[in-house]
Amino acid sequence: MTYRFLVCSIVTLLTLAVAANASAQVAARAPDRGTVQQLQKLSAKPTPKLADGRTDFNGTWDHLGGIEFVRPVKKADGSLCLIGCAATPTGAPPAPFPPVQTDFPKYKPEVQAKVADYNTRQVQLDTNLRCQPPGVPRIGPPSKIVQNAREVVFLYDDVNGAFFRIIPTDGRPHRKDVPASYLGDAIARIEGDTLVVETVGFNEDTWLTDNGAFHTKDLKVTERFRRVGDTIEWRATVQDPSILVEPWSLKPQMMWVTDIEIEEPARCEDRDVEHIIDGSHHDNPR
Image (cartoon, rainbow, N blue to C red; front, top):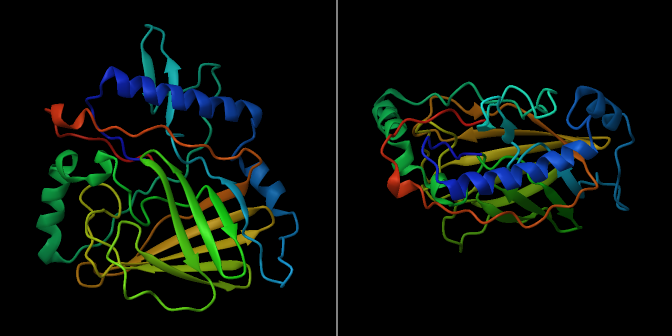
């Protein structure tokens, strides 16, 4: 997620550490969690279908999201490392992360100065650092999908809180009577084993990713969820033609069925932001 400050309060650090320890307990229950071997085994299973023959996307889905990027490691000098640590307390390497997005949207020349300015002032301008919804596609894949004959519901267990999206799949068009929002207005269709979600109607308060990657109200995001056995491959493509040279695609992420139900996430507090005196930041782990 996007807690990228270099200055953190003791309260924030303790909150992250507690949440991370909970994640570590989950990892202990499933030591092969997120490994290639686990994904190969799960993808070899038959792809479930609903009674009407459509692919079944119901389930609680693990993808190493939420607070996973925080992995507390006690160092030799007694200090506590939370992010980017070389090894877990047991000496084993950390569980794999979702692929880090190393490329960046290609902005048109006339807006590149704005991107650079926003990047410099990210800790002051990025609403995701103030507990606001991350937006789409920055929020990533959902942690739970509930599907019926008319719609799918996405539930998110995010660092910034619990979020949801209700997405019709019955062929209705985008709504015209709703205000622009952080997560937009989505409609979906099922194409074989793939759920295709198209989202428009965004406000301009979110970014596509870190480093000043702003968007306009004309943003359109297309997500594709391809189910294979007990896994889903999530892909997202961004279109914003007034400022982007070409569509921008995120690196695919894998999701897999889990029997560990999501819980209410820890409260997000931005109590450190007003005290920041250094605007530098590190890259987003997701």
